[in-house]
Length: 412
Image (cartoon, rainbow, N blue to C red; front, side, top):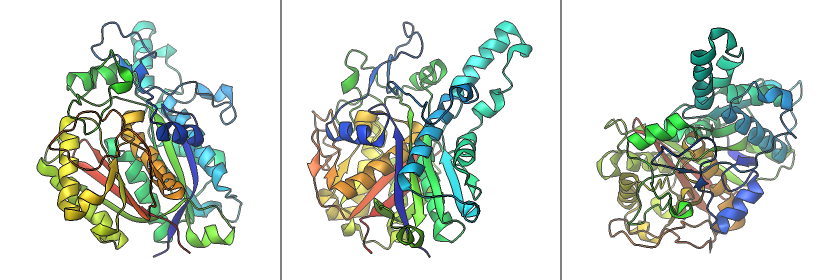
């Protein structure tokens, strides 16, 4: 099978509207959680989220086209084009069918559904926009990117809740690895800071209610964690066969070396007891990459700041890695970005690649009170310089779906 490398990055997040800004703020331990501005919040028990600040897509998306796209598509198109530009890859008539797009989301066009449902109820069917259907369909994120860059190869998406971004990258990795494409834009996107989303997650008792201190609300692995913080954005990478990247002298951030996916087959929303499914998935990624547990230096954890995820993910890591678990660095960048749902895996794949490329690990902020049941090295509060060879990124979603990626420092 062919080797696959990352040659481009694109990001929109609550801590920045570019890869450079987001990475700088992640290393500085800056939180992107703030009071919600998208809708009136007076009646909501949860009034905080990770909104993207000051998003300006005008250099990529003409203003006249914005009305055709829900925000999750706008984020994906912007980040996808930026990743494509960063890669330096040129799509021509000769290679267009060898380039594809694979960008997923967990919930898609919920904001458009809420808005146009209200229009239908208040003003009638004649006032519903003809763009409504393509605004809401999740694969339109990939569709718009492919149209923009001219990629005529594989075009699809994963819709697997909070694992969507990681599944999309993993699937795209396998598409290149088996020879069905040479270049893929892949990742995740989400924009569901909406009344219905916040109300729904709140009804499940899944969200932090630390409204009086938003920047401290997302606190993975901390004893006083009380739920996750919903967030929005997109994280998208350019994947390329090593042969193609070398032939054109591309900049290589890291190599993708393994992918695991499986199911808990346990519960709609609660992870399987003791992290059994998560642990098996990590093992699958290790096996796919041909790694031994002691080869891994750092894990970008799913780390949502919920009681059961953080507990069971810790248990899964300890079971898979044994004595080496205590030597691993494990951090959750969701402590700063919040939980981007379907976009989380894309964002965290980028942070994983940048950790390898720059030799530094972004911290888990808001880690102030140790939980005796979460007893790994979570890189608390301050970024850490580290020589990294192998990094893993975990993503776990509702429905018991799990996905894990393994990356390695590129060696010719």
